[in-house]
Length: 127
Image 1 (cartoon, rainbow, N blue to C red):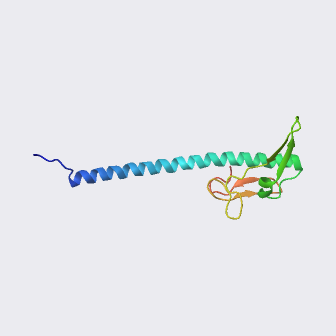
Image 2 (image 1 turned 90 degrees about the vertical axis):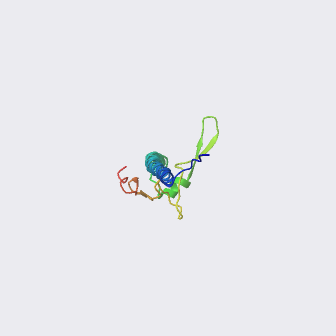
Image 3 (image 1 turned 45 degrees about the vertical axis):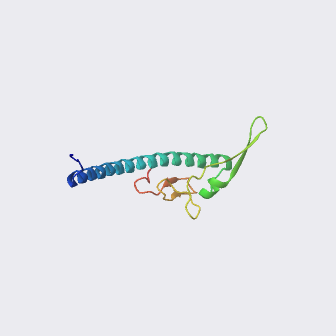
């Protein structure tokens, strides 16, 4: 009876192949995570900037800080007499102190004099 089993060389070859596939998956996963974070940052910047502009239109001033923008409730009465309560911008991620952070978990910069809002993440400051 001829028993066929895997030799040490074959086992090492399979192990190396598995390691190469895991490495390729890691590279692809890292790139996909970066693209997803960039997309999320783009949408968050747009939404918060819109909230800042809307806040200025309603209150004739920029919010004092981002907490005011995310916590102050606006009551809107519709044409049918229904009151709706909305906030100006939704806080998606907060750090331990309660500050808004971007998808890369860095704080945002907000100037309450000019209404300028941007990320402090390296290479994304100009977005």
